[in-house]
Structures are given as structure tokens and as C-alpha cells.
Length: 205
Image (cartoon, rainbow, N blue to C red):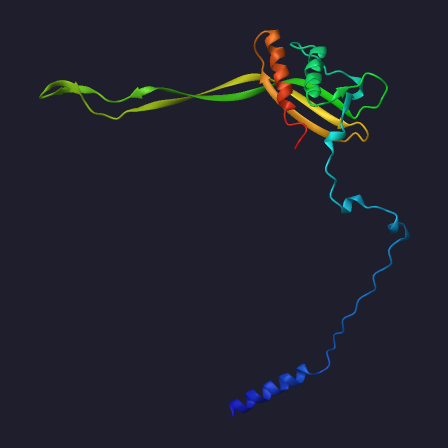
């Protein structure tokens, strides 16, 4: 009896599957594209083209202003250091009315760094003593005591920024730091090295 009831339920289920589906798929047609779509290029729909750094051959100071001077380096000295680093990368300064390829800005600032050093002050432990053969070395644990010292140091941070002269977009930005110590001549040498370090990865590969 149970088997007949089960068979009847299966037959009813199959009959229901063969019935008409009351749900009918429908969709609205896609509206036509606007007339200006044929002549408009949507840049946001495509990845940005890689920047051609090879087309940058000349430069001028941003807004015609030299880098600001400081108490340990005047404006002309900073400008000379930046100009030398740019020259090594094939970028020549413009001194006439022709448009430059790049605008350059540079600045120096003092910042404080927190440093930590670890000192190991020798070994400890171990002892000598007497035994039945006389005085001799004994045995013990040996090790060292690390001491962490924290101090603050002032450094000079050199910031160099390059901008596309046609559209004003940032092209390159980098910074490097050097110690704020020594004579004025030593500090200028350190600033030149810091500028060179900041520009070391230009142009990017």
C-alpha cells in the first residue's frame, strides 16, 4: 500500500513538471548610445599609459624660485647641489624663455630621530678555586649583559620634487637625510650626498 502511494506521488510530481511555467523571462532593450559616444574617448576606462621619462630633457625652478636657504646652507648652495644631481641624469637647466620639460622644487628641513644602540658589557660568571691538586680554574655560567641606550639626533632631510611642466602633474618625489653635525663645509658635502641619494633611483626603471 505504501509503495503504491509513493508511486502515485512520483507520477503527480512528473505531471506537475510538465505543466506550463507561469514565470516568463522578459527584459527591456538596451537604449541606444548617445550620439557623442562615437567621438568621445573615455580615458578612465583604460589604464594610464606608462610615463616616458626619456622625453624630459630640460628643467626650470618651480615658479622661478630657488630652494630656500637655511642657517647652515644658503639658497645658492642648495640649488647647486640639486642642479648637479639633475645634470648627471641628463637634465639641463633652461636660462631663456623656452618652455621647460620639468619644474623642480627642493627644500631642506630639520627633523629629530630617535636612535637605539646596544652595548654588550663583557662576560660574567665563572670562578676559580682550590681542589686536591691545588688552585685551578673552576666552573660556572658565562654570559653578557646587553644594555640598550636611547638617544635623539637631529638630521637634515632633503626633499626633491619634479613636476611635468605641461600639465603640472607630479613626476617624481624623493627625500634623503644626512647628519646635522660638523663644520659648514662638511655639512654642505653631506647635503650634496643626500641630494644624490634622493635622486639615485631617477629615472625609475
